[in-house]
Image 1 (cartoon, one colour):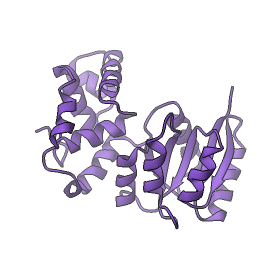
Image 2 (cartoon, rainbow, N blue to C red):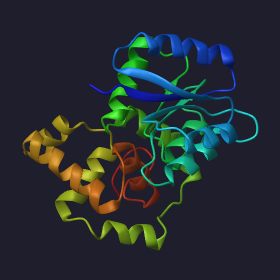
Image 3 (tube, helix red, strand yellow):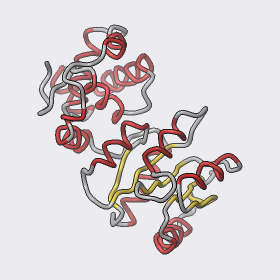
Image 4 (tube, one colour):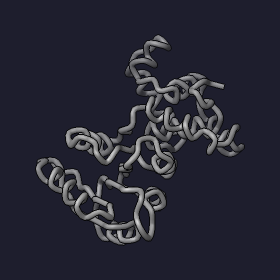
Length: 225
């Protein structure tokens, strides 16, 4: 099995050392690159093959949010996992909008960090939808009350059932909970979620939630409009 290639981006050398020691003990992970700020990270990435980036948000020269945005706008970008000091801060919100696949606290237990890296690598979001919704509810004033026309036009690509599933994803329900609510099999719900991601050009459930709020499909508080 090919190890997951991880890059550490943090201006604190001691923190990078700690993360590296944890990851080095895993047979399925390999720290292949490090950087102390966003500018250096972008330079290193050009010469490195990376699967997952652990990204700090508060760094000199170029912060983690803008670095994430630039990484995710490239071709075949690595997955980005935002590391933040405070739960539900504006950096995490901005990081998700920039294309990150999730966010975690820096003091997360090692086992949870490892699980998160594996989940991100496999294409899943590592933020529970309910946590993402809580994050978006807090920063709802940063979102438009009704989505801009181009963003709303995207939703026209969805079937009625897909829109229904999208609302429930944005409200924080898991695939199993959505299946029970709509009286569908969990496999069918998974298929609908996959089609939503494909039609809207989104990478994971986190981005589904962000778009649902941006377009006004879901209001602050989690209710459908």
